[in-house]
Image (cartoon, rainbow over all chains, first blue to last red; front, side, top):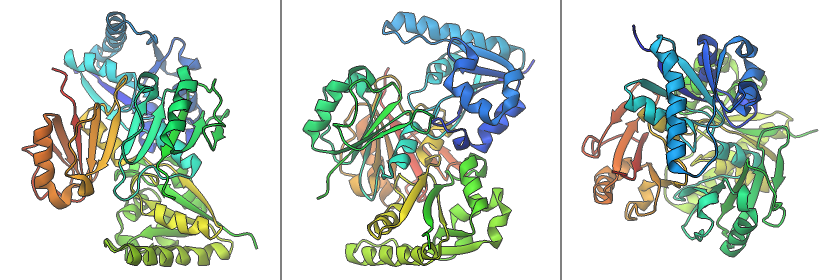
Length: 230
Length: 230
């Protein structure tokens, strides 16, 4: 039997209207939908997609739990387990559509499953979604890059010690766990700083300076730090 | 009279199916559609949108010509001229939807118009689109960033002399005008290099190594250079 294809499909940053037509079509056309999380219907990606495709509720939903831990061996074991779960469906000739917040190529848990699936000989296809940082920049009314400016996207959770000293714009993601430290880094940079928490979601908040960003800002906080040109 | 709103709307990288529902709605709901280029119907952004929204052909199409020149004073004059063109409609209380390839916050000509419009007191709203580099990574089946990796998006046209020596992944955009130089830079970097020309368009081509990239690759060429982990 022909094996199914595993699709990694971005559903965008939160606003269901920012889903692409292709994401919607793939969800409609396929019966097995994998969702990151312990309970499929509680996942943010599920809630985004279900707002546009109510038929999703009646599909075969496969929750794939990826714990947020630091032990590499344990993580690898969890990724293998997640991939094996999808392979059961692929072996039956069924496609699996794994829906994910944002874009499947940018800090996406699907990347880990993809590595296992490809090593095991399965076909994987990625369908881009609006990444959170493009949505955040749009919400703030800022350009991320103009002319010859580079753009640096940095997961601040691991990199808070690096100075923001390259030319161009920095986007800091995943800063929530030590925001006070990140704010100190931003102050020292002398950059123009703005941030969005829960961009394009119901609980969205906009901050127009470092000082406005609360130290306990949530996981979906995204900071844009631009060079000053004045 | 209430002034209209200027919308900068990304229509994604080329495949009309990668447009968002929001982009489609804004084009359908508004009568004045601005398009970058000399002739509206020849613009790539127009052709993407018209494939999904055939009604576009009958709307008031406003071509905004932005010449590719290097003289800053001349460029500024052109941007002012383009913005003034849109302001005529905004002053009549009409919204203007400026459609653009990719995302309106990433190397987008609309940013220049936005600066003038905002300085003149007009309201601007940005609607994100799939940026070309997310589409290229998806097409190549590559992740752009995992775990604690940074992502650097660099317009190689101006930066070909910089070594690619930061940790993480580099995306090189706008390399076409001196691809031979850029290829030498890539060779020296020791990175794993893949590229897409005309991603998600009819003339799409994929290159799996530096050597495969032709020296005369076109304007819509995008290079992904990843660190080797072997």
